[in-house]
Length: 258
Length: 258
Image (tube, rainbow over all chains, first blue to last red; front, side, top):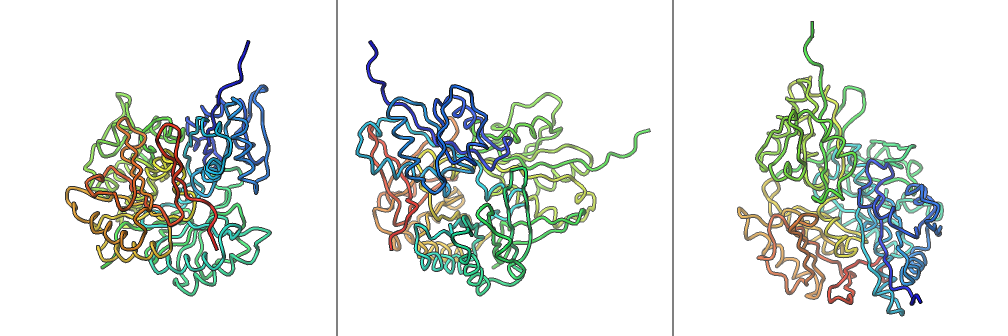
């Protein structure tokens, strides 16, 4: 006689930016060990292929909490679940949603699930490495999405990090549902940083259609940016170096004048 | 007849936090392809073992620019050089030093070197994943070292990011040469954040002697922190969840009240 299955496991897997050369062996091992893989289709495409006996659960990208609850329900029933996330799941991604679902859980079995979070190379890090080292000194990472945060708070934070002269990595900069906010953020940044401030746009870095653009705050147009773009706004110290092939490196020096 | 060697290559390799399960295949491939490996002894120990024919160049940890210049000189002579860095070389590590050395270079051959930067999982990301998801929403990463930045500027930035209610990851928090500055930073933070603000200390996360401490701003003592510690100071929203084994998860929710 077989009793009810004991609690299983839930691993939040950071896939890195896309290129399997930038995915950790820990992530590969967690995917190989999973009985069930949960994720948004784009991330499942990056994570696969899977074996025939592995169950794949596709979820909507906007429904992060529903996806997390589904994963816990499977794991509480004994499954070895991998929730896949691009980049680092701890940076504007699934890890916080999974812990939010756990904190709100009524089912005590969810707390018995063996939960692990596997970090990965984030989109901003991959774009930064391709551009040089724009995040080489003090920086911040801010989400421009006001789905869960009031826009006034986003503008307040942008103004303060400009005053602190931090390099700024902007996540979720612009979507079809929020086409105008990036332009508002850009206007705010232009009022506070010099026109020649270096800007790096990384779109799908580490994927087949990777695009890297190096421009300035004055030349940047909102139409160059979408949800698949990470925007890195340089500090007053961020510099460009010409390369022999006509491209440029971008870096933020470790030293500060004064 | 063999002419002079053409320019070689220089790859700045992010080793990740230490555990080889968190090192990317791209980093492994760059180490395997290198004729010369340059780095601080602690990072060389993480990166090795090397093959007998690979030349290993040990350098002092404080001499980042000298190390970068040495690497360019080797690469300009035709070597395939790997400069090793723990974590992500783009985050308070070797990538900015390498680009600084390149910008200042007199030798045009240095600009012909095939330069690549390979990102890795940073110390803060590894500590965050072990703790849960403290970097799950807007955050910043600041260096507390005043070797290259005036202390007054560090205090000014700390005050502004407190006002912005960002989660704060502190790099280089305390060294033997700077034993008192972390205490000064802590006093500033205590004046601006609640006593029960969650603090995560990650020491050597991803290495054999990994230590994770979850505490509060009120309870934190400077003696708990050294140069091998990443300190993550929660925002007003960062939360703790009890785990059945007596430990806790820490996360910063994606949503913001208001």
